[in-house]
Image (cartoon, rainbow over all chains, first blue to last red; front, side):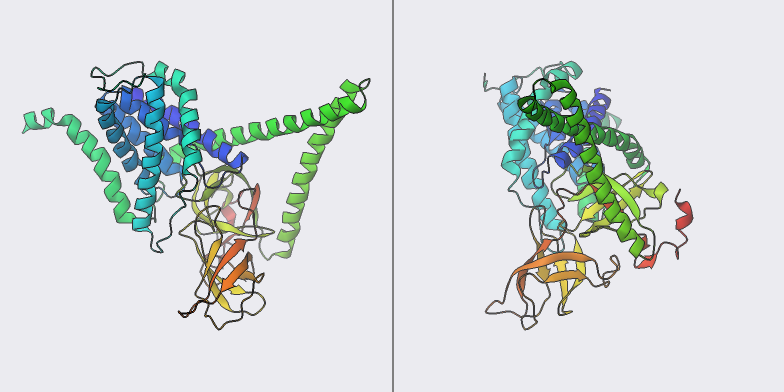
Length: 167
Length: 287
């Protein structure tokens, strides 16, 4: 039932993030704290538990948007699977590789979300991607800050480490 | 069959978690669903947490201001440092209160001029996803806030309510790519549509014929034709209108009259689909 711990943490972090971005007046940049949780779950948790965690984090993000559409739960599970696949190639157990996975996941998530928003937008207008570089930096920093806490929630390491070690 | 399900358990669970929400998204698009029991529970828990964080950050901001004031006082009068610091901190707190008071008074005087009583709300959070531009306010269903109600400040239009539950509501900002407002140019009464183009981007002026009289600096106000906003509310100021060589319509951007990144308090107009809430018998639900 570790996914409940991930969900509780995600709820707290998303609440904090929504206030932080308001306080600092961010307009196009967000801190993707939920994604940092999804990446961690993909690298450390079992498949079912990790997928459930990713889904619940995405669900919460969906609720926080004000217009829950199902976009974010689906994307969170997709990112979970992609990171898990990447974890087979690259050893994702170290802190540095975790940061690398977060950066890649943030870019991929932003691109996919923008593309799918464009697909369903009647006017063809989509959000600018200009905030993504700063979003990557902030999300990586948030992930690094959460690392000790996440290790307490899910200390387990996947039995089959990736082939390439980054550190 | 049972063995197959048992063997493919992981695949089926993960597949369902992936496919179901994406199909739901592609099916419903940007419309979103009505808040269900889980959504309401999440919002019931998160709203007080957001309010608490907002209160904490406001407090930290006050302390930071007090610290700056304290350093100034130290340079000016070292002997009276402690007492001056206290005085400065108090002055700073009073300044904050005064600024808030002025904003609220401006809103109340606005409310006095209006036919119906607006609901004053505080912004407690920004949507953590960059794809949807919305804010969360600390007034909801229990305060009489309903989906579709316009949200404004004395400076102009902020957006409209897209979800209202318990003690909070979400407001889609006018900069959201799905936002579309029917407006008129205040000076010439030429009809125009203001389309959202994403955060930190000006709105787009649409469906204005190239021969119509629209100049840089013209104010666009709501026309009351979109079924959401009553007429006469300021939307934005036209910037750099261009008449293209080909095509029927003018191209231009619209700078919102409200600084949406700095908005702290808002007014919710109790009208839905242009009908006053009182007429819909919604007023009795307010405390």
